[in-house]
Image (cartoon, rainbow, N blue to C red; front, side):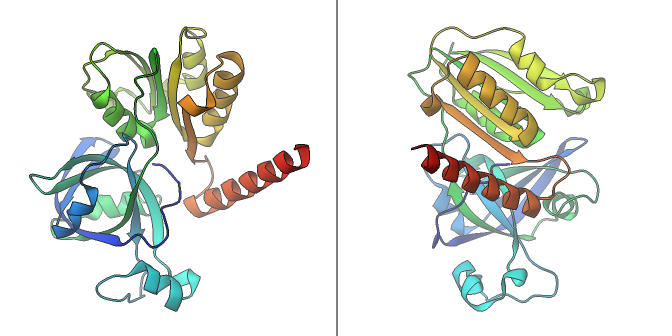
Length: 277
């Protein structure tokens, strides 16, 4: 799940649920389609993402849906809630777009929606956006994340050149949450089980500083993301331009609170940089 801004003015995309599948006990795949799918042709980023718009109960929005009109004419508390999801797959020939949802019972907004979604249900999306793809400049690749980043990691692995050396570390609850990951790369995939008390940061550090030019993708819970950012930049010497890193969520915070906290942190960092300039 990436939480980055989508460009203002980008039109929304309305699709309909075609089918769904339970991939693991806590991962649901939704396949959707519709005429608006043409907006997703030619995606180049392996972390391409959309913002799913979840209506506020009791609020009627313009038809056809127009997010710009909503922003201009509705109070902010009536704007649809947004949740960000990686585009797992697009099949233009079949007219299908695939999104994978993590769900934990009644917690959150998008997870419960995915649990109850039925064929014919409407999805309104903003996007796509994105910023990462495997680079031919890298000697080796590092992919790290939890369930929220697993779809993007899976897409990246599918796009890796044949034989490319890749280290992958994915934190999930237990073995039941592991998924097959297809790739032609020389990938070493490590599943880190949260239920066993295993530590994702320790697992990444254990092999030591990787040799050569490393491109890294590190996304997921903000706590381990912050620790690994420091490790990769200061101890491993990974170049900033070859590091894609973001906290998708923070433990103990809902999405709105986490976005507000991230905005405050970025403002503080910007002010500190200007003060030190």
